[in-house]
Length: 340
Image 1 (spheres, one colour):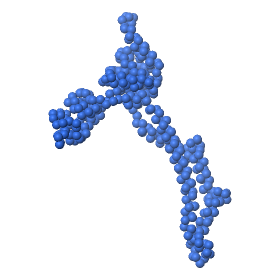
Image 2 (cartoon, rainbow, N blue to C red; image 1 turned 60 degrees about the horizontal axis):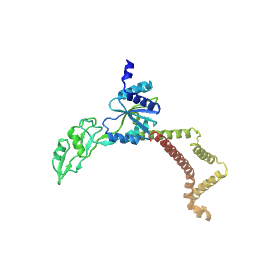
Image 3 (cartoon, rainbow, N blue to C red; image 1 turned 30 degrees about the horizontal axis):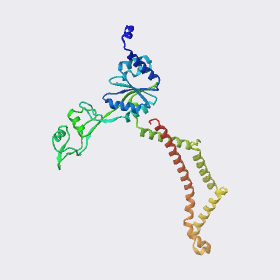
Image 4 (cartoon, rainbow, N blue to C red; image 1 turned 60 degrees about the vertical axis):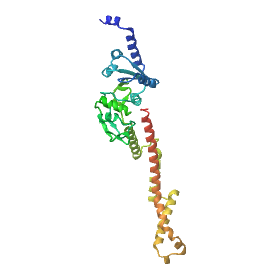
């Protein structure tokens, strides 16, 4: 029986199957996409747009099944995704980049009668380009509140004319096209992508990039804080750790009154400040002329000395924040490359 099938099978079918198998072996990723409802001109435009990064091949589903069957156990997992008008995409892009590329290649298209709305279709209130006439009745019959005001046809109120997943009537489809409202999207819809190990569905590939960036930045910040608190030196934290150590050592030296050159200057300033506060408390008849002349400085000097450690601490904190920002930006750039 098998011999008879081979004898009567057209040569072009064998060539098509062999071409699919060769492309599958020569690329990292195989994707099954729906081409339902795509006009020929637009399909050729998408093919030309992707020609540098992907190869699109249209074949009969029976030939695709046969090619997958002969390719081995791995591609058999794609069987269930081959239904209806189908094309195969062969590429070396990872599935996430391919999915994003396909999503961005879609273009608005007018609705057809019987199609389901991909989302809530809303007609905004305001003027229309139409002159008074039968169009008013057409709009009203389609559920759109229209009227004539000052010689113009206007939409009186914003209205949701059809909700997501509801069918679009022929009357509404006609009116939406006349209003130049194109709620549909035409393009390649990915059903599944296979990278040799995992089958990815659209829900796996449709991710919130901003949310992931936020999580990535948060993870970087937490890791940096942990490294600082654990005093674990890395190329990113060693500078901050040294600054922190220097600051803490200076505080310890000041509290212990260690007579080192850098510490001594601050200790003398602090002692002078305390002395000047005392001078300020004494009456003038207990002071000589020089101390009376310096009496006004007692209220300002202590604050300057008191703020010195705080200023040093703020400097360390600014350094930490700067390094966190740089690391966050680096991490975001790395994650973003996955979707470019």
